[in-house]
Each structure stands twice: as C-alpha cells, then as structure tokens.
Length: 497
Image 1: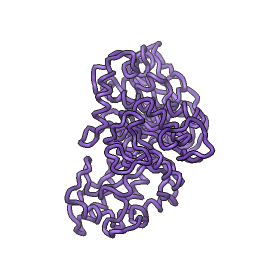
Image 2 (image 1 turned 90 degrees about the vertical axis):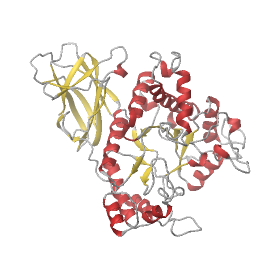
Image 3 (image 1 turned 120 degrees about the horizontal axis):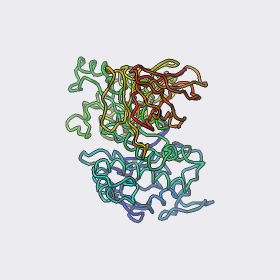
Image 4 (image 1 turned 30 degrees about the horizontal axis):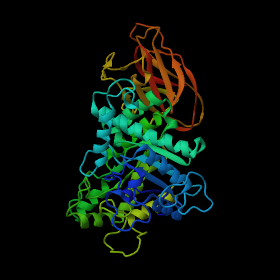
C-alpha cells in the first residue's frame, strides 16, 4: 500500500451494493463471518491507512442517513469504542482515529451515475431524487419542481455530496477542509451526460462558492488501446501497446479539467488505469489468462508512464488507480506468477515506482497567452453550458450566450483554458458583436469572480473589445469562465494582455 499516496477502499466497503442506511446496520469491527453487501468496518479501514501511513479515500453508502454520516465523520476524527464513535478526543481510544497528518478523501457512493448491472447506487439515488424533486422546500428543487427525473438525479448526487462535505466540516472544523478533509464530486468521465457540469451549476446556484464544498471532481481515468487484445500473438500484442492509450483519453481528461478548474476545483479521477480484456461492466469471462499476460508484459510499464504524462499534460491532478488485486484486467499483481505473498514487482507496480521519481511534464492544455483566443479555434478547448441554443452567428465566427437574470447560475457560459509562462498581473477582456449598452458578462478565473465586462454598444457587426479587468494569473494553467449576466451577447475572442 505504501507504493501509493492514497488508499481508496471502495470495494472494501462494497460501495456498489452497500444498502446500509443506519449506523446500527453497519459492520462492526468485532464481526465474525460474512459481511454481505455491507463490507468491512470503518475502524479496520482507518487502521490500514494508519499502518501504511497513507491518505484514505472513503465511499459513503448511498442510502446512509444523516446520523450515519455524522457518526462516520466523528469516527474518523476521534476514533470509536467498536460500536459508537467518540465525540471528543480520547487519550486512549479503543480504535483510533485517522492519525494526524493523513488526509481523507470523501466520495458519495461509487459511480452513482452508472445504470449498469451491479451498480445499485444509481437506482437508490434515483429513487431518492424522485422522492424529493417536486418538493420545492428541498434543495434539489429550490428553483421549482424538477420535472425531469434524470436532472433531479444529477442534482441529488451533488446535493448529497455537498451535505456530506458540510457534515465533515462541522466535525473537523473550517481549517481542516480541503487540507485534511477533501470531499470529491465524482461524475462520468469527460463530463459524460453532463453529470459534472449540471451538478456544479446547480450547486453554485444553491450554495454559491463550490470551493467551500469540494476539493476536487471529475470522472474516471481508464484508458484503452484502439487495438483489442483478442489474443496473445506477437503481432496483436505489439499493436495493442503501440496504440495504448487512444487519443480520446487526453480529450476526456481535458474536458473534466476545464469544468473542475473552471469552478476552482482540482481534477481528480476516482479510478483509472489500463484494463486489457475488460469491459465497461467488468465482464471478463474467459479472458483471465489473456489479461494476466498483457499486464505482465514489460511494455505495460512504459505505456502507463505515457498515459500518466497525458493525464498531467491535460490538467489532471490526482489519478487513483484500480485495483491492487481483483478483476484480472485491472489488477496490479502478476497473475501468471501464482504468488503467495503481496506482489510489489509487477510491471504495473514498476510503473508506479517510476512515477514517484519522474519529473512532472509540462501542461499543454489551453492556449498560450498573452494574446487572443478565438473561441471557434479547434485548439481553444472550449466547453459550454447553454440552454439549447448552440448556434454560431456572424458567418460562423461568434457564439451567443444568454443571461438568466433571475438566477445567474443558469445563465449560458463558455469556459476556456489558458496558459501563461509567468505569474503576474494581466488584463482580460472579450470581443463582442452587436452588443447593447446594457449587456454584461461575468468573468471568473479558476472559480473566482473577477467582476463584470461591459461590451461596447455597436451594431456594425464587427468585433469590439469590452472593458477589461486586471487579474493575477498563476504561472501555468488557468480556466476562464465567461457567463452572460445581462442580455444576449455575441462573443468571439478572449483577449489577455
């Protein structure tokens, strides 16, 4: 475990099928026999993290009630007597708290977006969302009844994740948040089905600054080859490794990075890595030996290093790999060796050893500035959130974003990654077309509101530069978020001077 910086115990607590609602239903540490769908005890997991001296990642059961979450936070902060958590520091706790200096990452369930077989969290969360989506006194319906149950589900995931964060804040205190306690908003990779962007937008509308709720967010970071590992012939294996990972891996990482950093969060993958012979549902029947053969090949190490560089270059921060020992495609142990002791020398673990010593690659995501970033450029890496009108105007050169002045969190926006070689003070503006005197644009940088830009009233159809805002940019990657706050504004370029 010490080869890694974080221990994620999703399978340890059977997060995908853990139906526990109350604290009394959880698995106690002195339980003997099968734990069923509830998995192992929290005390044992804390002891493992303490023994390994590594940060801990926990997956809170989807159906856990408010009191359960409170007691879980107390257990991590103060320890327990084996039945109940303490509510204050103890000189000699029977079972210890997470020791000082270690961090805890906190996630709501696991892949709650996943409707596949075995992922019961999706069904349970959908039921909970449906039970509350028409109740305007509930946070997920603060702006009116939610008629679409799947939009309600996206809000529910963000709501429950935020509630867990707030509960841990009450126990650990403000100073511990985002340092010792690191809540994560997990979604589908590449902002798939808008789980990430809709969750962030709803949370900003209801809570305000989402950096007070979450340390990071994002989807998984699995990567495949464009050549399927159908056999173990020399030609097939060479082609597999030559094309691992595919170009889509970097593209999906970039999407998640733009959304998370656009709201001021770190880009974190709850799971990831290569999985030869595996499927999205984990079905590997008849392919165990094939998966073991590919994973034991020395070329796997080098391709994992390449994939890690792609992850980091596209804005990734923390990538949690799945799994030390389990389903053969994703396993880090050498299944060909039939080892009876913990395997620490497999090609995949050699890759982890190398990553610890390897210098970080330069970030390539985003357009280098000072200069103008043309929104329509294929290299701009633009991400958008609109109400459905995604048309380009003025000969296909400009993009229109509309304000929702009664709830700015619902206003249309664009997000653009940029890079500066040196930190310092810069001026940021936009170019707009056919703006009116009352149009306004909000400017956010890395999740922080910098102020409003005022377009020049003009009807010539030619781009005009707005007022500018002085912004302190750190060296490297930043994400600029431009949101309409008044009017319907045609925008064409981001200008950084």
